[in-house]
Image 1 (spheres, one colour):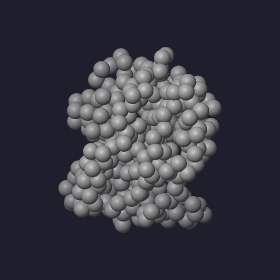
Image 2 (image 1 turned 45 degrees about the vertical axis):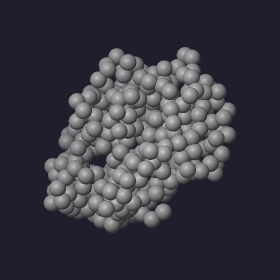
Image 3 (image 1 turned 135 degrees about the horizontal axis):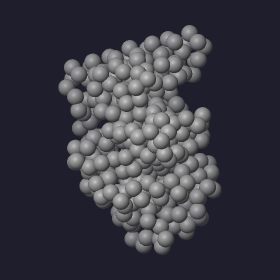
Image 4 (image 1 turned 60 degrees about the horizontal axis):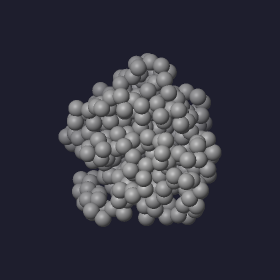
Length: 344
C-alpha cells in the first residue's frame, strides 16, 4: 500500500467528541435516550411534493458554499431537508428558504452527523429519503435509480451509489466489512489492492458486483420506515462508524443493502467542517468505540495494536518521502486509536 492510500475518504461533519470508553458509551447512550424523548424533529406536517417520491437529506456544518454549488445542479423544486449543525452562523436557512420544497432544521449545534441525520430522517414525510453530503454531486437520475431499487425490493433497506474521488476513481471506503483480526491485518498490509473484498474498506471496480456488509451514506437511498425501526444511525457515534453500525443492524434483521457499482457520484468537491487531522483522530477513536461495542477486550487489543503498527509504518514512510501532510494524517489516526477523540 502506498503511504497515501491507507485511510478511506473522510466524512466532513465535525462533532462534539466523547472518549471511547465504556463509561462514555453509557453516557452517550443516556444522552441519545434523552434527545429521543425531547426531539424537536417531529414528523413534518408539510405534504409530499407532487411529482417527487423522495426527499434529499443533508447535514451542514459551515457548508453553505458547498450547498450553493450542489443546489445549482439540482431542480429547484426537489424536496430537500438541511439539518444545520452550525447554529445558523452561515445563514443556511436563507439558502433553503429559496427552495419551494426545502426544509430547514436547526439541530442546536454540535450534534454530530448521526444525530443530525436522524433528525432529518425522523421529520420527513416521505417513504424514501436519499442521504447525501454537501460535497457530493448526485444527479436526480442517480437518486431516482436508487429509490427505484427500494421500490422493486421490499427487503432492501438501503441502496447506495459508488462515490468517486477528485481523481475520478472509486473511493476507498464506499462501504466495507465487519472488522475481524484477519481483515484488519489485510487492511494494514494493503491487501485490498489485490483482493478488493479481503480487508476492511471497499474500493469497488466499476460495473463489477460487490457486496459489502455496510455502505457509506454519502449518496444512499433509504427506506425510511425500516431505517427508523432499526433505530436509525447509532447516535453514540458522533461521526464515523455509524454507517458500519447500520449495516450490522440491517444484517442482523435479515434485511438487505446494495452497492450500485454502475452509478457514480463525484465526492470531495471541497469538504466542510473541521481540519483533516482532527477528523482522522476522530475516525480512529470511533473505530475503537465500535470494536469495543462488539468484541471482547482481548480481541479489541489485537485489532487496535495491528492498526497502530500499520499506520505507524505508513507515517514513517510518508515522512521519509517528504509527504508531511499525509504523515500528519496517519499520526492523527493513531492518536485517535490510542487516546480517543480530539478536544472541541
